[in-house]
Length: 305
Image (cartoon, rainbow, N blue to C red; front, side, top):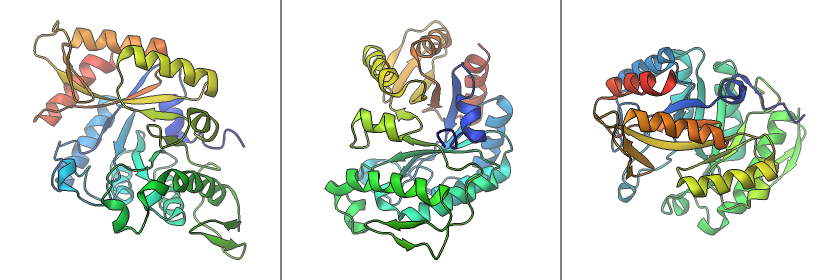
């Protein structure tokens, strides 16, 4: 039972000892409006050909202008279904599904469908959500999101693993007369709580199949990983990182939001460092306006080391 989450996507990201590298939608960097679908899918195919290990899509139910971006704006499930149809081997990830705002049965069915359509390539980052105005729109109390998150994780596991389950929850009542179909390619789908998700690290280590976190200063990252390994053993740790490659390959790092601007030589050493201290997967994104050229540059500089 413990390994039923190890689908093809999980194995692509975490099945080897080395650091794997993914990238995130919108690949065109269209963050405040609807991205061009054809261009996004062409870039998704390019990322796969270049050797990236995953494509990650965010879940942003409603547009809140004050937040500054809309993810890829399309609903995460049909978007990843389209990505599945346009790729063949690259892992597909959610970063991350806002569980308190989605009905567990809908999440379970949509995720299992994408997992099946992609031959088991789905890996799910899951989160509590941080855009407060979305919660009253869905009739959900913002302060209840941590409890609803835990309940959703519990229900998802059982909906995927059991046939005709008998379940009771705040939003679910099943008496064994109906079943969720399709089921995932394995007995479950990998779940990576994102950030703290209003849970203790002990809870995440016990109930998650890994941990997805944000970019952290190196000393903080080291301490997080030390605690994670003590609590979670070999369960994987993934992180986000914004990468701005400087024209000068030897340029020292300058902090930017959730990452750095630096030369390729510094980034190569940084990737070696985070791999050495225990990071298993890194999701890179770029802030520039030449997405195709930047994908190629990232692959040349960071995937072949």
